[in-house]
Length: 449
Image (cartoon, rainbow, N blue to C red; front, side, top):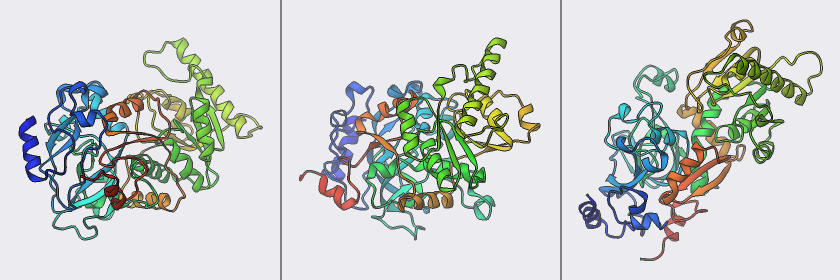
């Protein structure tokens, strides 16, 4: 594939590719320019021109299991837009758990979902509309955009009058579809496009979509009201840092749960009114196979944790009744505590389960105190647009803490898996350096020739 694909692309546009195209079997023989951190392009292709082949981080079934070995740079066929789709030249891509799960092959293999021979991960992107399908009217080639990651059929009942997130054919772009954002081009539905806030760099704009838009929907579905207490697990991460800001905007009282002093400082800077370090409560996390003694210790730790929250909120009379809303995405380790900590008629809203999907909890706390568990998944186009407008107007700030070059995309995902990061992280793709904000400036940043 190597020399043949290289010749095909060079014959079309010899000025385009800087890196040698070819299948990479390991990091050591990754195309040389990519491995060295050089830009993926000598210059951007002419506006509207998409080469037959492109470079991207591909996962294949036989490589699933380890993030760094699963994601390899390959030359793959560029996507083509359908009538209601667009091709986006990706300037930068945001890192989230969709890419981690795809690389691990857990809890399911993405190849059992879309059955494509390769998978390019990535559900967050900033870039430029490079080609449009025949039916596209609201967007044009050259528009600077970000995306939301949810793809729908546009034809069923939920898509036309209820909520597109209930679409019978709903898919997550870059997880349940093969062309994600960690490549030079990606294909998306036109309804996924959002205006890029012009004051943000490409990497800032790519970093917040999944976290911000999901948090917006979660708190909306939980009907968060002024004065509500909102307990936020993982409050310094890619979901939690937006949950703090959105809860604050809604007049609620964000309670940030973190695991270090550094993360606590970040949560306070975002507006958390109470910050609790969960590492001060050993035994709080549920572990499968726990003994009766383990269970007793966990329940004692949960009660102590609840008292700390009550004390921090200034509760002085009797037993602390709990919080109004629990913002859940950790899953197995924290869910028993979440159900216990919600007050009577309280709401537990959950969008994921990074520590495990099988949840164990004492259901008596649920029914006897009439609590609700609310599922949330992604965000529809309107919710994404509303959340994006808050970013564009400076009401919500991206919390980008690390930017990786394209050559280090696997390491970026590994840092998320190992919880070594706070805030959000992004990778440069077509943008040759950080700090660029628009197409004109990006073209000017490439070296002549």
